[in-house]
Amino acid sequence: MLHLDNMTAGSRAILDQLSIELPSWAFGNSGTRFRVFGTAGTPRTPFEKIADAAQVHKMTGVTPWVSLHIPWDMVDDFSELRAFAESEGVELGTINSNVFQDEDYKLGSLCNPDPKVREKAIAHHIACIDIMRQTGSRDLKIWLADGTNYPGQDSIRARQDRLAESLQRIYNELDEDQRLVLEYKFFEPAFYHTDVPDWGTALVHCVDLGERAKVVLDTGHHAPGTNIEFIVAQLLRRGRLGAFDFNSRFYADDDLIVGAADPFQLFRIVWEIVSGGGFDPAAEVNFMLDQCHNLEEKIPGEILSATNVQEAVAKALLIDPEELAAAQCSDDVLAGNRVLMDAFSTDVRPLLEEWREERGLPARPYEAFQESGYLDKIRSERTGGTAMSWGA
Ligand code: AOS
Ligand code: ZN
Ligand code: ZN
Image (cartoon, rainbow, N blue to C red; front, top):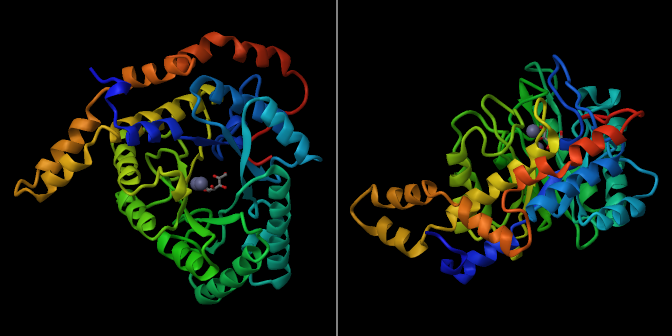
């Protein structure tokens, strides 16, 4: 039987320090281009999104941060939002810029052929940096919808040059304790070419920008079959893995609950983070979720996501690095694989129940939340107003 007492001090520290940032947009309604199904009690303001996010932390104890998207989470006074978050037991985290929902951005934002549009997009990022000063956020996260749909529509190379110049202007505005984290995605909404399609392109731009520019790895942003753990290993060894957007996919950028589609892939990724020192606070990797709950209730969806990541981490921590290294030096090509599979096949849920009970948290967060009555409360209290949704 596994017990916390049997863990090494190093493994125990990783488990204790694990923190996962929640995306504010996960608490709003979302869907596909075919239909958005609303839920009763959905937040109508950024304050209500924070209140819901705080429930996830109260139940799991591993989600103390909430990431904001600007302008979706625009408020008159960010110090008021910050104080509210703190009163709810959470803190404001990464600021995500939004330069994809304005008519002007039809042909792109930071790569747009029109200098006036590029200036507008740069100005939005500078406004986001100012918000970061008020929220106390460290990271400015940039994901761009820029790209083209047709060969010849624009110059791929000129767009890279515009991107480099725009990013440098933004980077130069950051304070010393702030970072720029750049997210890549190989397709959508552009389908011929995307301006930041892969980790190599993101890394090249980050290296040019400076030490405080890092790459964001969204697990849903790769072609099928991509070995994501390899990318994790490479970015960690170069000190350029800035953040994760965890989610699951069956097809493309599905944004489903992390660990739902392929828990083994999540385990492999997490093991690469463990073995590469990515959970060491000094590595400064921000572990975030980027998910939408189209059919399921949002708060339970986020609770399951947090506990799925925590389970994958606990399993990866069962791997004895010395045993694995010895196996990898043997002539048996399957020896190392057996070490990994033994860890993956172990049920760590009782261990995590023990961890939660030690902290006065519910042993089973998902069930505890369902029994808490919070959903009934928000369903009856949040009447009138307009429910927030992904993108508004
Ligand atoms: C888009 O596909 C990216 O995953 C971004 O992280 C995006 O800003 C986020 O999904 C919010 O919708
Ligand atoms: Zn993302
Ligand atoms: Zn995405």
